[in-house]
Length: 248
Image: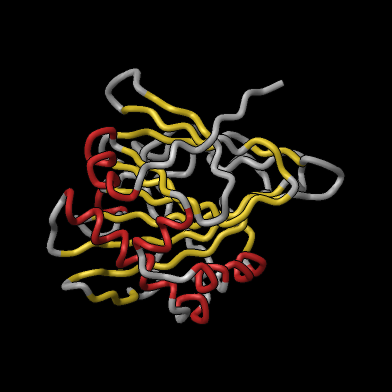
């Protein structure tokens, strides 16, 4: 029997102090909706798009358990602009398994980005991050992920515990279907402090100060005979431009 720990939800009023103090915070779905001025029904309007993700062809473990789409945005002066489609790149310092290479993922579909909830999510989180770290602009990468159990085991973070090489990371749980596992673990990068919990409610949210915290999610397994999956939306915010091979 493996213990399962509930998500340690932060009261909305304490979000900035929690994120600034401990380096991470977890928000309940209702507080996410309020923070981003979006109705729950508008969030749910995004969910069907996870059924149309493309297989991640870059997994070095040879697996086919991850599907994803990717898009980039620049946020300045409270305005959001989509950047031309570009590869996702991380240095080997941050991703020892898949770093050091340009990974061209299929773009997030235009009809998803056109949904009313999309800009509100990105702008709402930027407002939080800017209170902790005021910057002229945020360079945002958005990743839709589906991890499935078609091969028995699905690995949300095959690279293990890691940082992303950005300023802040936001991980939304979009859905969990017929799985067990998928525990979230966050650790202080420079000390022993850490916490483990499982995001279970759709549109619950983990926020991380990536300069201070390491994170990972444990593998998922099927909870029955059917193939299960775990869907997430990951947004990363960086002040110094998009990561590229020029950073190496």
